[in-house]
Length: 165
Image (cartoon, rainbow, N blue to C red; front, side, top):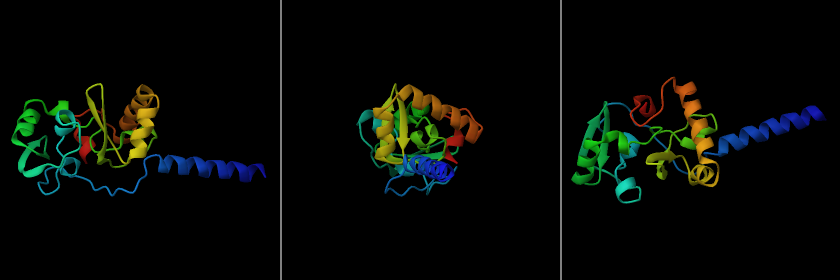
């Protein structure tokens, strides 16, 4: 009886971890140097800061930084990015910040985002974002940083190309 209870608790825990970043959104990945598959699914990273919203970029306004192609909604946003790319790049690249804090690597959906302390974080779903907003953000951030280092073997931060593979 106790063994069955332990198995059920383990399964429930695994399901909770799996669904903490789950949602109905489909996520595809960007690849280094592919102009037809831009970073963060073609969303404009500057618009999160300047417009306070997720905005689709345009192939008319692109810039390649560290082998990654970025799209922008305007020439002005493109210029802002060129001047300070790491100011506007997502902190964990294209990975779900909440997924990393829950110790799994999952792609993010650019429609679900949060800016905290001048850093852009992307999430797989609104639920993942809500976990960070409603919880202990410094703890969540620290756990995500630790797992990013462990899983990707790299130092997290907006300029880390490992966040875009």
